[in-house]
Image (cartoon, helix red, strand yellow):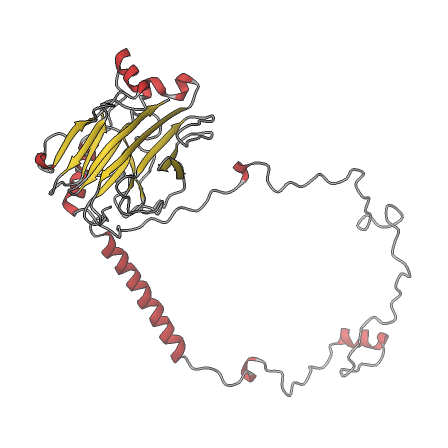
Length: 387
C-alpha cells in the first residue's frame, strides 16, 4: 500500500508524451527526407586527369626511372640502398631501436581482491503507485507538514528499569494520540493472556494507523556501537490472526520508525521510517511513492512475519540477521525463514528518492512500528528483541 505524490504521475506522463512526440516528429522527418539515388556526386573520381608533375617531382622521377602513372607499384626511391639486416638488439644499433627485456617477470594480475573493489549495484527501481491501494493526497500532505513542523527527537535518557525492559522484550504497543485523522472506535488494543504482549484489532472505517513500541528497541545513547564497540541487532515479529481475503480491503505493515512519526501514516512512508507492506509485498523507506519490489504480497491469516535491523560492524546471528562494516542492514522473515533484505546505504535515484538513512543511521532512537489499515484485522505481537 502506498501513495504517489500528488501531481508527480501527471508530470511523468507529460514528460513521456513530449518525448514520444519529439521522437515521432523526428521519425516522420526521416521518412519524408529524400533518399539519394546515386552516390556519384559524393565520389567525383570519374574521368579524372592527374595534374602535371612539379619540377621536384620530375627530378625525382628522372632519378627513379621513367614516369608511368598507370604503373601500380611505382615508387620514387627504387634505387635507394636498404640495410640487408636489422640492427642487433641490446647494442650496436641506434638508441631509438635499442631494447633490453626486464630482468624480473611481470607482477601477477588479480581481477579484484575483495568485495569493496566491485562497483555498487544499480539503484532498485521505484514505483509511482501501488497495484493494490493508495492513500489519499490530503493525508500525504499532512504527513509532510507534520515532519516539517516536528524535527526528530534527540536520544532520550532511560532508567535502569527501562533498559531492562528493552533487553528482555517486556514491551507493548502504544495507541496513537487522538487526532482528526483517527477513529478511536475502529482500533482496539489488548494483551495476550500468556505473554502479555499486545494484540491489535481493527473494525470497519480504520484509517492508516501506525503504533510504536513503548520503548525504543535501539536506544542511541546506550546502544550505539561507538560506545559499546559491538554491533546492535533489533528484531520485531508478529502473527496475523485475522485478515480480509482481498488485499484491497485491508493491509498490515511492519517496520521501524524514529520519533516523532505521524501516526496517521504507515511505516516507511515518511522521514525516519522503513516498512514492508503486506498487500503489495513492497518495501518502503522514506518513500511515499509506490515502494520497491521486495517479497510476495498477499499475506494471509496464520502467517508470521518479522523485520530486523543491525547497527554497527561485526557479525550478528539469530533472527536471520547479519552486519557488515558500516552496518545498516535490514532483513525480513516469513514463517521463521529469512527471505530477503537490503542495506540502508544502497544506491538510490537522486532525482526522485529521499535519503533512506535519515533517522535510521544510528544517531536516533528507533522503535518497532506496526501499521494497519482497514477493518477485520487482528495481529498478535510475538517478539520484541534487542541484543
